[in-house]
Length: 93
Image (cartoon, rainbow, N blue to C red):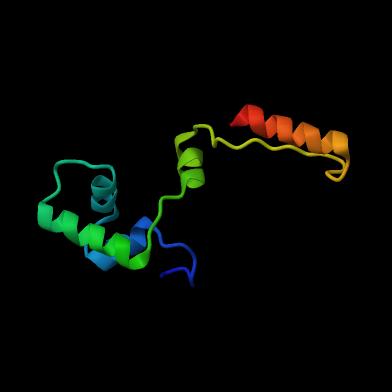
């Protein structure tokens, strides 16, 4: 990949498939205005390089929530802190 072993990007998929990043995006979002042969090439490139969407990056770009909760506790070995963490996790789920 172009970033020395980092997770593949849309650009990496586009280069492998010989299409633009916009075409890769259209294929991944299910747009109907992509030729079936192009769609197959893009999907093959996605599989070949192991591309997976980065949900955190997407949420930052779209200014939407990340679905993450931060919890800072002074001592996780403390029974009360552990119970608090378990309770927060249960409520979040």
